[in-house]
Length: 84
Image (spheres, rainbow, N blue to C red):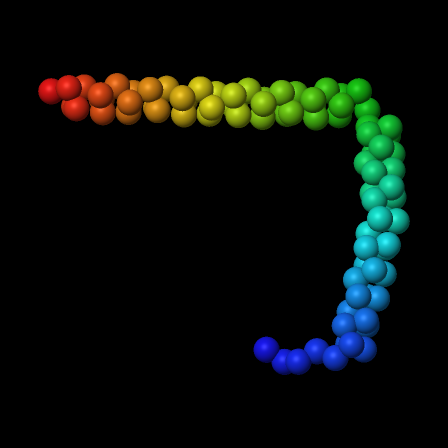
């Protein structure tokens, strides 16, 4: 690893601070763009977006349930094997 002098370290810290400030300033802008986009969407677009979100949530819950069932089946067969 190369040695770093104090000046280089201060420069890096300064650049990092600038980036953090820019990022913090951009956050409200990005949020506002999303809000504007949602304001402009039609009722049909809104319903479509909400329907897609609902479908995704259902699929996610189904995956969790399937995972739990798989785990229960594995546990059952493991216990059965150990007892036999």
